[in-house]
Amino acid sequence: MEDIYLGLGSNGERQVLRLGRANRHGLIAGATGTGKTVTLQGIAEQFSMRGVPVFMADVKGDLAGIAMPGSPTFKHAASLEARAKELGIEDYAYSDNPAVFWDLYGESGHPIRTTISEMGPLLLSRLMGLNETQEGVLNIAFRYADDNGLLLIDLPDLQSVLVACAENAGALATKYGNVSKASVGTIQRQLLAFESQGADRFFGEPAFEVNDFLKVDDQGRGMVNVLAADKLMQSPKLYATFLLWLLSELFEALPEVGDPEKPCLVFFFDEAHLLFDDVPQALMEKVEQVVRLIRSKGVGVFFVTQNPIDIPEKIAGQLGNRVQHALRAFTPRDQKAIRAAAETFRINKDLDVETVITELKVGEALVSTLDDDGAPSVVQRTLIAPPRSRLGPLTPKERAVIQSVSPFDGKYDTALNRESAAEVLAQKAADAAAAAQQIEDEGADKQRAAPRRTTSMWEKAGKAAAGAVASSAGAVIAASITGKKSRAAPVASGVTAVVGSIATSIGGEAFGRFARGILGGLLR
Image 1 (cartoon, helix red, strand yellow):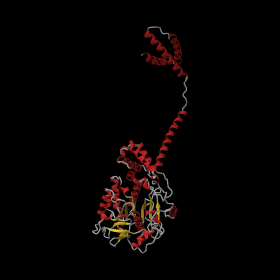
Image 2 (cartoon, one colour):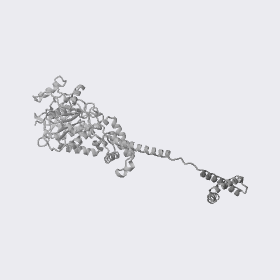
Image 3 (cartoon, one colour):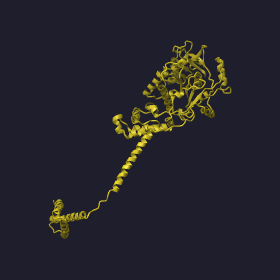
């Protein structure tokens, strides 16, 4: 099968990217305005022509033009046709490519969604910039949800589980570890900020199926999956985390294929430096692992960046196919980048690479790719082959027409909301409140239904006697203390008469015990 034609080297040799080595990853680098995007588009459309699906992020909005053929009336048409003639491309003709548009926000393409569970605590922690303690609390929330059968699908699910963890922090401490309410509060604030960026639309269902990136059209051309990233780039952490999640999903979903004749997918990661800015060590190790191992799944990853030193050494060492456009030596960092880029190429004794990098014109690049035996080729100064599709954005009408014939029309466009953690916890709270109210209502009903207790004649008589005796006893005690005759004697006599009457009625012996008990307590 024909390889990817990159251009014509200064030594007169064709520079190609071998399909069987495309899964060994690559780098497209160069300063702004040196032709990186055009190079990316030309490589992507050639992969498509050879039946290899492609994914690429459209950061500036102009890669969408890959879905439309170029035109002789286009302002750069003359230079494209001249370059094709200069390179001896006799069959050069404008052509389109089968494209599918995607958009996390669902505005300029099919929405891409995943669930909170699929994203996982590690990527979410990176996305929210959590420290080690906060990341630990987030891990506890995920474990608590798993142990209690709570599905984490969208942001409300995670927020509800965090609230449940905070409310039950004491009970959870012995099993999972300490759950600080302060850490929960920080995570909740980050989730709210995350939601305000529109990320709430990224989490939900139907969840994206990575195999939908691996389609070919009825002519056998690989689908070009274009992610609208112009708005997404306003949230760079979300952009980088999403693409890393996508790589991880591909790694987990695809079978081992070793080194196939051609890749099953080529993944272009534009603005790649965003992936490595302020990355925790645990996440960096995951990135390295995915990049190192995903080639055995038949996936080639091409990092596109302005400065080659933006790529960590452990990952840069795995990028065997390189297209280096011009760099500018304006700062000490630029000079360092030039030296680093020059040192990564296989030496060409006829080429002063460090000097040439600063002299390359637009549409020129230093190219080194892997040979059939896996060794990097000698670096060559190369005129890059022109793309055949449109250079530039689509009109809204053109985009709408392409979307209307998409093979995924209607599959992801309508969000689903099935019962998950938020609904389950809300129902439990409602059930608990209803049960408490029922108990309270039953208690009130019993109290109202209980018979009123009436006071009998004997109880009234007993209370009167007790009061009279107590009054008389008080008077007697006062008289004994002061030595004066009690003025309560007439009252006492009256009481005695009443008491005697009661005593006669209830029995003298019983009443005597009653009176002794009261008087003994008062006079003792």
